[in-house]
Length: 277
Figure: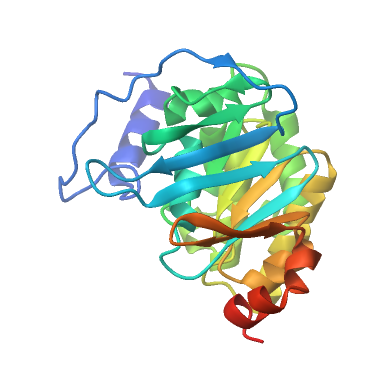
């Protein structure tokens, strides 16, 4: 075994986010990818269309739900607790099987792809929790994000550090020692290391202070304005709609309202029901 193998093997075995010490869970060997197919004329860059489905053999959580985002846009998914927001994101990423509907990315139908192959197809996904390797340094976390690449990753890493200067200063510090907001920056940076075509964020500001939330939103805006579509689930609905080019309000797994962030902010029903006034 080489020194590198020994280092990474030992580190991974110590990291609770990589190895489950309690032994729960099973490997699902059935989630192999099927073929891709053609998209539809006039498709947005990414669309999950008429999605219905749930987890395993349980009931449907999504009901004819449609979510889409174009290049350079920020699209947000908001709604009450239990509305299916994160489930819609996971459905687009391939973490549950759809019983109806399809997911299409950049002119291809990718409904049959598993999550790993959706990453290779261009999706960068940041889950809400367990989204960093705590015992690894910031730099090592970013290196892990580039696992699908075989080229020189140094330029991308420097671009990530330029985007998130607060974590650049702590590049050799264990990611688990950082503040909550800095850990989220590392998680987003790690997703960017794959050089994705679309960035998907599941509640990126959960548990962070309002100041840190504003800072994260500023970085998300910068990413989108660089041309990358950003799709995110966000509990802070009003703040998210302020930066959204497109917003989806879900209720019980179905589209209740769709429009620009400003349109929905001006909608009396949306404001009264979801925005507290």
